[in-house]
Image 1 (tube, rainbow, N blue to C red):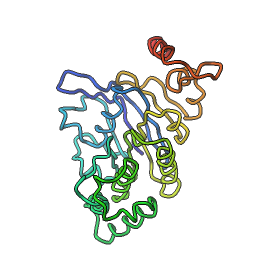
Image 2 (image 1 turned 60 degrees about the vertical axis):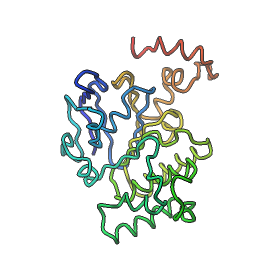
Image 3 (image 1 turned 120 degrees about the horizontal axis):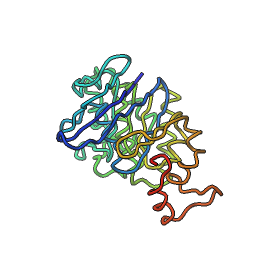
Image 4 (image 1 turned 90 degrees about the horizontal axis):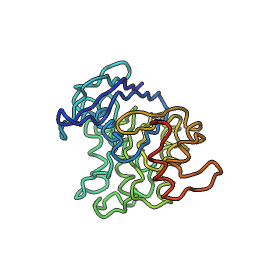
Length: 263
């Protein structure tokens, strides 16, 4: 469905942010893209969405294709019409607009009838937003803003939904709710989800496959349950030693310097 093949992304013609990245996202699947800050995860999502240009980023090599058609060079609005939508890190709502106005902005390419149906689906998925529909978005909690951001993305009925750090800065209970929504979306609508997330354990728990990025390249990939059992992933990303006890930050920092997959 969505495939990246040996993609290289460069900023300002000098900084290589992504190097020979290949990954696939099948229909109705959830793929987790994991890695530390600066690994190239968000850049990868921006390349798929066609929004590298504001930061002088450019795909220098490789190919991004969706349903067999290349996406490179396609305008962002056309990529949305193809069925690929991204929820960016930090939500980025229109703070001065109401919840419903923000949702309607996500359906700007749809007919009025489609937008009405989209609103009904969004409120069914996020019942707490029903009572907040006339509330200015800037006054919502972080969790409610994230729900609006996801609901806005769903207004265009995407085939692929890309989520960039959807639980960043949210309370544990809200994080659990967001991950539950991600699972429900795949189950109820069959949408494919590419999930960038710092909470590796929670992300792999809902994903079918996972990819781990380091310094702009994929260093490890496989079924999510297999990655959860992988000794390297458990030590570095989940903070557990072989005996199952949580490692100290000092030990994690030491392990960061000796990761076996980079040796």
